Amino acid sequence: MGKWWGQLRRSLWVLGGVLLPCLGLAQATDTLPMGRFQRPGVRVGEVLEYELIYRHAPSLAVIFPDSAADFAPFEYVSRRYYPTRTRRGRSLDRAIYRLRTFRLDSVQTLSLPVTILRGRDTLLLQTPPAQVRLVRVLPAGTVPETPPVLRQNLQLQPVAQQFNYPYWLAGLASVLLLAGGLVLGFRQNLRRRYRRYRLRKNHAYFLAQYARHVERFTLSRSLTNMERAITLWKNYLSTLEDNNISSLTTREIVAHYQNDADVGLALRLTDRVIYGNQESEDESETDLAFVLLRTFAERQFQKVYAVS
Image (tube, rainbow, N blue to C red):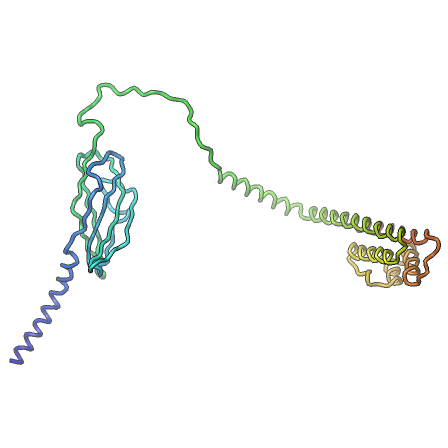
């Protein structure tokens, strides 16, 4: 009895291994994909919607047709897919295709394939044919005896203006290339002109500030204003000649300018007033010092400007 029961169990396992895949395929294909047109009739060239629906087991991998599928006798326009919905162990896939036809058949039929992936194999399930009736504008067989007369209309219709982006972008690129070429070609000249512009601007600013300090000193006879004028003069020459005479003593400055008589006389007069507190009763001496320093700064400016 035990031996017979063991053989029966082995037979049932073998039979189950054979039948279960078949049952799975039967479950996968128990329903076919369905397709239908949204309207019963369509005119030539008119867009018509075709709905494709497939209910299947959730474990199946289903692929709906895309734009490369064969929609004959219709032409593909666009499509709209909907997310898969699963309820009570069944999944629903749905898509709507927008088609149009230019065929003159009275009744036109469409059947689309749905692809099921099973490992390395694929299974094509064809939808039952869906039909649509062609709606004719003129009754069949109605042919006018003479062609209609066409009315000629040569009146121009207003057209909305649009911004021409390609031309404007091409023009902007040309301007940028031209500007870049000019900058590269005249780079040295532009640098020289800019340097001269900066020199003139700095010199004009120095003269204005220097005259203001001298005027304040003349009105108040304050040593602070004289010190500010001398400091401004030293800083200007340091910037103009790219040196550091502002940190040098009077003797070193005179030696730096090869014992220039005007510089030596002007700095000695100002040092006697500032450091020696020996202001001359003759105001012409301090005025002369200011004039000599300004004249020397203008000479140095002309030298640097000529070689820049």
